[in-house]
Length: 93
Image (cartoon, rainbow, N blue to C red; front, side, top):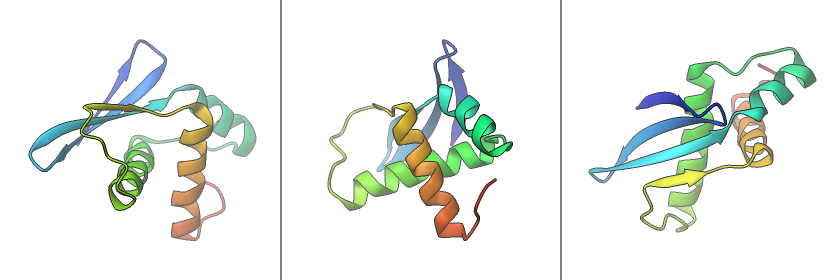
């Protein structure tokens, strides 16, 4: 896994899936929205969890189409963040 910012509009998280590279691009505005709403920051490990949750979801649902890059909107990024926190039993982080 690797994490990188891209053009100040996304944070990209790289995974290897069945021997090929898959990038999950998380919308950077989600960081500001989450901070404003909760006072907490999205850390690199949390970003990896968000992207991993999205990737797991599309793999389990058969929605992974073989693309190299999947781009999430701010709303999608925050929805997967909330799902990660719910699964961990955390209200905010």
